[in-house]
Picture 1 (cartoon, rainbow, N blue to C red):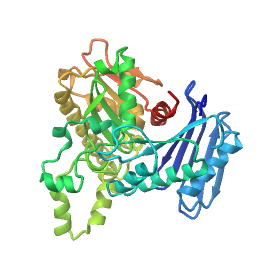
Picture 2 (cartoon, one colour):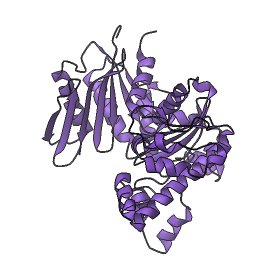
Picture 3 (cartoon, rainbow, N blue to C red):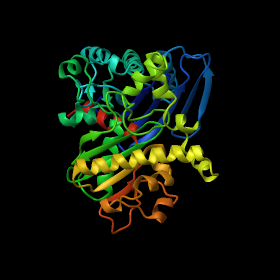
Picture 4 (cartoon, rainbow, N blue to C red):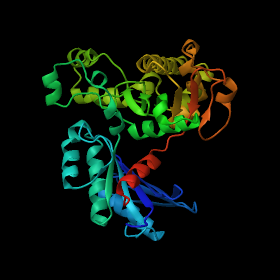
Length: 401
């Protein structure tokens, strides 16, 4: 691997495989691809090399192994296959690392077995992640494989933040605790927010708001996560596109006893038919904003519930951190919705958190401040880059010392 500088990042989801090939000398994207609708009658592969000439194919793709082999074929067609001597490492996104994995980890048989043991904590995601790792290992056993865990950044939470107030023996037996997710995004964005302020991450306290279809908040003190909104699963916390977020657990008992709903149906309700979708029938914030502007009361209510939960978490994390240097908005909604950013900080000027309307509305890209110069707390928009974060962590671990 001496001198090799390329990293292949693989994100094997429940029905898709996303991949990127990066050159770590300048962090350039050499290829970006997606295989979606895996297991359906017809899947779609989209591959875009560095020259921007996108290639698309529709064909049956029965499983994740077949999807990754197709991705490898596309990369080989560019002269950048998995057998290239320039490939230093393959970095894999793994959703759940439990308490076992607190940092990026070189994959061996024992690591694979432990990720398998954690499948009950992420039954939709860890099996797909495992399929990606196993196929990549089979395609080139000589290239190091590194697992980068969504949960790892949050393992620095103190016990008083990670524990649920239930019987300790039961919780420990069934590994019930708050793990948190979106960790690679929170790690990347908190560091970039510190850089935007011209300071070292160890000196800065940041509240990160990762707002996409899935949404989570984190309180980051000196580069270490001390609290996050998601819990045992990604269902806890903020209102999301289709997930309810925080909920009285007795709602589940009520639906089972009074409505006669089976557990699987309740699970589907809370994860797939709740959040913004459940409140107004749309989970696209752009469409909700359009409907609000047209005077739609259901869209207005959904937006207000969403923004209210955001403000509650912002205020709570100010209390957790004691001193806040920056609030950073990221992911699809956080980076693009001026309405959400304005509503999230509305009324928080007493905490030193406010935005400049002109800066917030400006059509700009890249990391930027949207708070007035006099504000005690910097408010920033920081585009996330989870693939680059995975590549950086994997390359740092695998390259020769």
